[in-house]
Length: 574
Image (tube, rainbow, N blue to C red; front, side):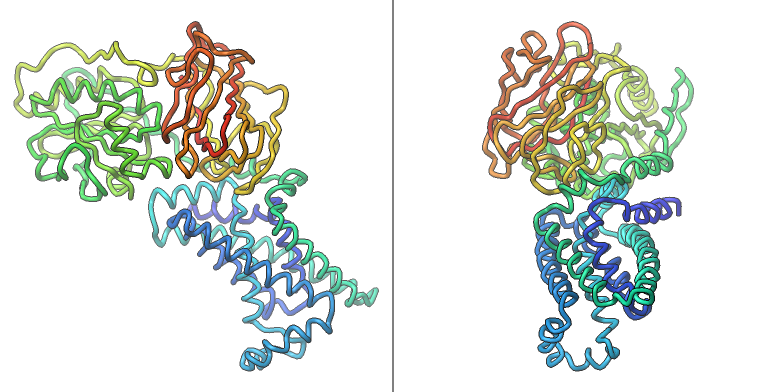
């Protein structure tokens, strides 16, 4: 219920979003007509259409986006015709003639002014298609949840609730607008001029949308931004991470549940499909990970070490690969990553998040320890506490009857690059997403959602601020460079800086150059660049770009891409 309330409030706040401004003239265009026959059908049509398009976007990916673009074109044509008919009653009569002739039944339902519930609903459908790309943090959260959980009644209900909130605020604007127009008509007799003015506004709105100004210029000139308010609402209802259970030496481990089904895996690597029945009698470690996650990568040396050390004593390690980004759903990408990372134990591809949901999991990495009877006895989220985790493995193996277990603890002292342990600096910069769905601390002005835009990075950045420079298209989970020599600048703190990158849709390598405080990195270069800062994006993965040789001080990182097409996803630090 709380999530529904959050979604509704997020929708109500949408009216303050700058990209809603071009839609308002379409709403006010019918403000002086009966609400039940005009305003209400239009708002219902808009809300249902938006919920449908947003649901398709959540579960259909690029296909739905392309479909929505076509829908926007159709909607702009419909609304442009509406604007022209508002400008001229003669033109309205001329344009309506073929529709009246072909749609006699629809005409019979219209009143003397030509109003029709169905025509109002059709206008709502067009408005909904135009409004669908307007997405704030709350809608981004809803769509992320939809991607994780797949198509469901709950997903559609959340999106419809969000749309209902926006429809409520628009209905209020419609009611206020109706009173204003009625007053103007009574006092000034300006009904015809009002109608023409609305026609001009409608056509101006269509022009802004066609030129991409609804998500570009308007986001920059508007004084009203709901992002901060929505983010506070999200933080207010987002649950805090569950506390880690402490294990005392010799104390019995509690039973936390049964091993859920593994049947939802879309593919298996390094093994035929495993089942709960085939694993009975084995101690099982389930490791939820995804190959571009720095925390997962840093824990891998320990997981590999446990798999090698105890495989002959009844331990089975299963890596459940639950993707965070779309490219991590591609089996070939995961197969390559598994090979490059030296993972030789079974890996289940959980592209539909079926296993993830079976464990009710929320974290990367997450480790679940299952005894020989198929019961979950312990869990651990995130990095660290490796000795305690190994103690749990040894205790469960001992319970299963194993004796003479090898002593000591796994200590992967030879871990290199991104797999090396983090610096432990509590003041290091936070994980930072580049896509607008989860972006924070962006210092380059407002972001044009899904539209190409020329960004200019400020001369000075504060700590943990970042900016784009050049021609970029910022999408929900990444930013794509549209012209060569684009830059990303970040004022960071930490020993290590990583950036998840991928080449363009054509797969061509993208050359880049890194500087730190305006100079070549030298001894502070990461494993994916040389001392002069040169590197190449050849695959969709995490790239280590900075590893400071001394300390974790605050520095200014800058990466310049010499070729277009690169896709930037997220920064992480160590």
